[in-house]
Length: 84
Image (cartoon, rainbow, N blue to C red):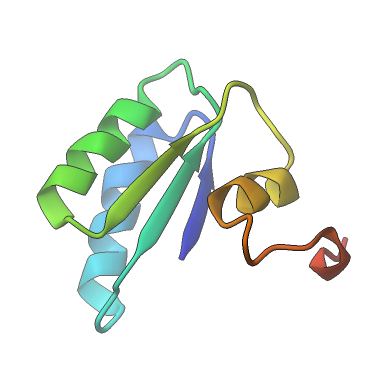
């Protein structure tokens, strides 16, 4: 699962905990954070330590959704698969 985040510090913990509780056998969550100034990346790191199945990709700026997904899994993503 890929979560593209920007300034989601207030929501990320609740979202991850809910996903961990309802998605059976959740093997991997990729949090792609676009340099959120409110600490979203730090919270993602704390959640990664807690759950162990979270990878954080830190982007230098606020990118479009498709660019976040491409940075999360460049070996799988093609721009042709993006629909508006």
